[in-house]
Structure formats: structure tokens, C-alpha cells
Image (cartoon, one colour):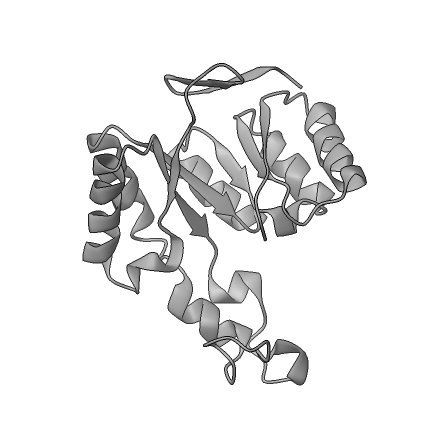
Length: 188
């Protein structure tokens, strides 16, 4: 892997200033206006980029009341299903090109974490400059290869990964000829 990646006009390496990504994701509470406010406040706070998550409830889980799909982990979402949670949390796809435009007007880089190939295809149509891979996706090697095949920089979270997981994901990118990968240590 390279010692540096460049996303649009921002170089990210060991000597560059910290690259700050503001997480929009579900923080908008299903309000487009809130999402716009978050992006503008991210700019005011000094962020370099904003990031969404690109999925729909149906592309990330099943609409199922089976016990395996119920949330019971001592959180505020206990008593609901994953599908219902993602229905409340996802960013509608029709908002995303508009939010990208807002981010660019604010001088921010627009990123997203896709969760399946249809999301990657959608983001390619939007011409996103880079991808963020969520740590829970780091073992999905065919998916990582699909993202890497687009030839764009990748920021890969490693929060739930073992060293073998990280090596496997990096090797997947190399196999696709993509060496523009930055690892992000996160807490998951």
C-alpha cells in the first residue's frame, strides 16, 4: 500500500494535518434540512469531509420478526427489529446527490460507506471521489474487491478486524490494482 492517498485536493499521509470526517449518517433524524445543517456545521467545525452510509433497509437486512432480527442488547432500540431500525436510520438515496452538492458548495469532500454492490453503483453514478469501508464489512472480500475495482481511494475502518482480516482486505485491494488505501483505527 502507498504511504499516501489523495482524495480530490487533500493528501492524507503521516505528515499531513489530520483529515477530519464528520459523520452525517442517521444523525439527520429523517430530516433533509437537518442533514444540510449538519454538513454546514461540519464545515464550521473544521471538517475536511462529510460521510454518509448508503444502504436501504432491504439491502442491509431482512424484514423479519424472527428472534435473530430483534434488537435485545440493552439499548434504546430494544424491542424493535433491525429492519425497523434501519428504516428510521437510513439516508434516502434521493437526498444523497443533493447532499453531495451542498457538501461541495461548502468546500467539503463527500464520502459514503456503501453496504452492497447496488450502493457502490449508485455512488459511482454520483461520482464520489473515494469510499469508506465500515469495519463490519472488512471480511466481505468480494465486496471489497468490487469497491477497489473502481480505482478510487479507500478509507478502511479496522475496529472489529483481526490482523488477518486487515491483510485479507488489503490483499483484495491489491488484486484489483488499487493501492490507494488508508487504514482507520476505530472503536466499534
